[in-house]
Image 1 (spheres, rainbow, N blue to C red):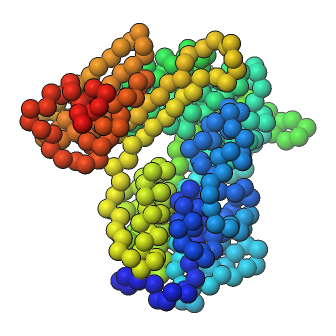
Image 2 (cartoon, rainbow, N blue to C red; image 1 turned 90 degrees about the horizontal axis):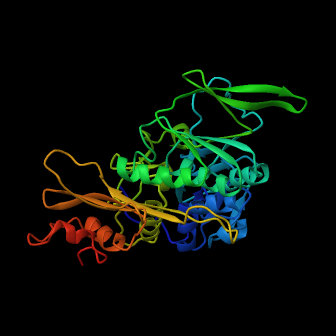
Image 3 (spheres, rainbow, N blue to C red; image 1 turned 90 degrees about the vertical axis):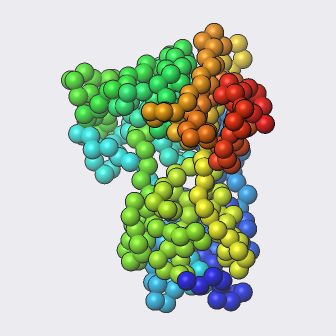
Length: 412
């Protein structure tokens, strides 16, 4: 594979103006960025804050090079190195970067087709957050389907807006990918104290539609046991799927995502991929941290300097903030962080500290003398040191007490 650009003036074209594409464009002078959304690039991590009304859209805007907004790439001509766009434009590239991100998963529910009926909203883009913000008002009945990171964030934000929120999660507990059962129980208690009704091990079967003068609208969410949840708003937060259609149509290697090597290069030496759409060493990250790290590495590669991406040991953080209105009652802000594998295997050492009165919980798992994972909820004073210990992946000192790992300095 080629290690450097063909020439200094070979144009770099970036398809996708999300967090990864925007970050890369600020580090590659002269890059052309094509983005489907009409908004300037923004911090997707803060969408729940926009929904809750804490931030206006311009507050979450990201520094970025100029973006051709509202333009969709429809075809890649690898032979002539051209990108064809839906506005009729054709872009020549020396290097092409696919930062196409991911789409929300639409679950196979009865009553849900390709075109979403009135009252049903995904929660993935700034437009989604703004549409929900416009639709929510005190007393509105909202059902959030999905109890992962996005679902929990959406439920908390909707509750802050005064909605009557029900959160339906198919799994045994909230945020199953990141939290152990004990931490998930504390998170559930936090949401319930805010008025969110949480149903776990709850399978949604379909949506009940009602025909209105303006079209069809969903008025209830139907569960597998026959029970119905009344809904003025239904939020789909069932995960995401990498957007690989453009790459697949161009003949690039695609598995779960667009396959890339350590230089974020696809099976075509002139095309790279990064962010949610990229699969590196059989891993899809779907988080902001790895996407930004990939963008920094790729900027070095495109500049002809040494750069290798060897994976990211990703830390998941979520801040469920207190309501913005002064004098209102409700739970205080809740911060949580999770990393690695918080579920112990046989033979692992586990240490937990819990303070139910303060709503604080910490646990770490040690495997073969190394920190394998952990969860912190409430007080995150130790998270920096723990994260460094885990990211370094070095053997813990034999004399170190496991309890010492959970002190405020994280053992450093």
